[in-house]
Image (cartoon, rainbow, N blue to C red; front, side, top):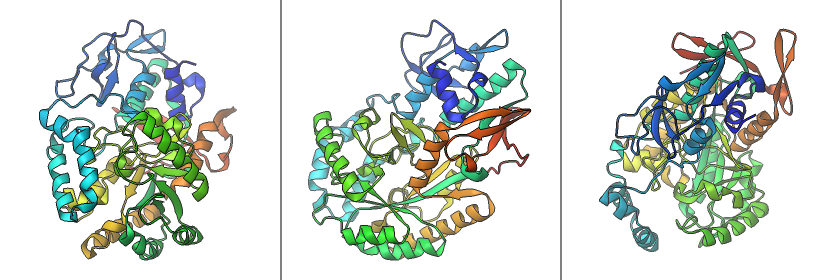
Length: 457
């Protein structure tokens, strides 16, 4: 099985023989942007143009797909394209003067040096200046980018057409036939936020929701073991949030390795399986230095984050041994203080887009920023909507650790033929469901094997 076939099989957990496609030879010597149907891709391709910017009209590689004796040949390497998107390898140094200046290391150093001395209102003003112009960023697409997931679906359609097969069996994405998955996380960043954690747990519990709290292990006032114990005793999850939240975790490789070693020690001390970096800074190619099980530091579309980019998928994915649970919605801080919106309209639009892909819906709501009555009212409205999705729309409301365990189990499951049907074999298979992908007009539709249609947005 080639790497390209492996990426496809890992995504769908379909039988290996189903992935009957190849990559054509003579790919371009350099990488660039092109499109594949309605998805943006980045990598090497054969037969058409590649561009160094998505601002240029992109050439569609769909025109160069080849079918030879019933076997599909893609005009690009699926593994390379998917990895380039997920791990943000498409990112290039910023081209505009303003972007280069505000992204410069010296400016970042100065900001984090004086940040503790700045009033909150001043910090918000500086952040709005830095993030200005975000609406003009063409890629990843706002408010949710599903390029990886669209590429996978279009590959399914091409495989079915090439083979003359009516449907493709695969292991459904979520346990018990859930239509999508959602998690709520809280990053605790200061004493006011820590003091509010008890009330925030009460609020989450009132909607039957258990959430994950990420704590900073090294601060001027170290995270209280009493708080960690209380969170866990009440059924909530505790993970690490950076080392000291100073913005320097990924500043350079030698320093990162020193800090990663300390983070790994705190992972054992706190008994944590998960991690999120401060301010969503990240360098996925360095993740192999971490010892935790899953990460939550990669945005889907990072328009409103200090580090731009995004993983362009609404599904978990592995970076080596680490499972990435991407952030697929806008942070509460960005919604309230950058966009100035006090409603759940944007969140609902993002949820609908993610659910249309049966994807992973993840939130960050900071205890420090929910102290304001107006912000807390918006958050309560969001919890009401999530409760509706869980009760009426089949969305699995889970803890990040539960998603980690499920996705790891699913990655070990296989489909075994039994007469004219299929069954799932492997760890956790009792909660797994067989599903089928079929083509309906110009779109791929998923149906569970018991003939129930999966709910979409």
